[in-house]
Length: 187
Image (cartoon, rainbow, N blue to C red; front, side, top):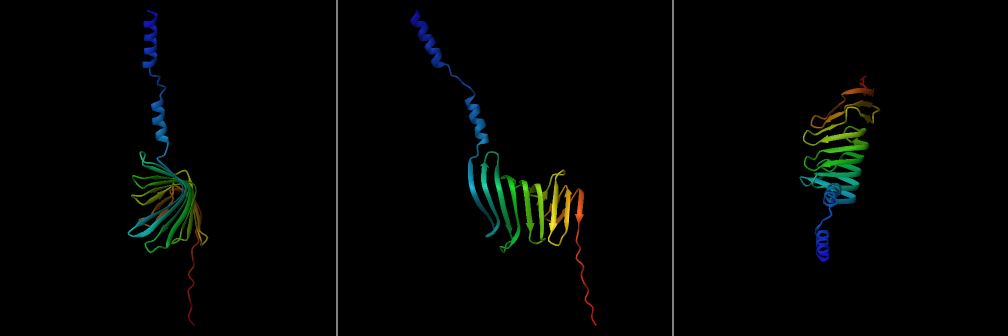
């Protein structure tokens, strides 16, 4: 009888599975662990046989399931089809949405437009790839400084690249420098 109880107890102990939620823990860790981590990243986007964008990042983390890539300490350059520099910039952090090609940029944003000869500084911007629109949050200021001395700061910044226009939705202040054309007099 004692032997039967001992065999039954051993069978119960061996057949019992202690589950401390390990599978759930593994699943949760999998969601928070990137599939790929790269450091000192250099990425060039080529369109129609010409480099169009160059991206440098100290670190890039890719989450394929989420369709997201997180970039840290980012520098980028936009090039024209003939290879001349159009825009350059930096950001502390960028979240690239792989399915839409939208980008959310945060922290110490600083961009320079060669064509406009203007700096754009902000703490947050969102690039909507489909509409080719760059926007800020309505509560965060954005500053535009042109090399001619123009300086404008405002909230609710919107840049529509398809129309080459920018505007602010509120809280605008600054100074616009207008160039005076001197007329030549003939004697």
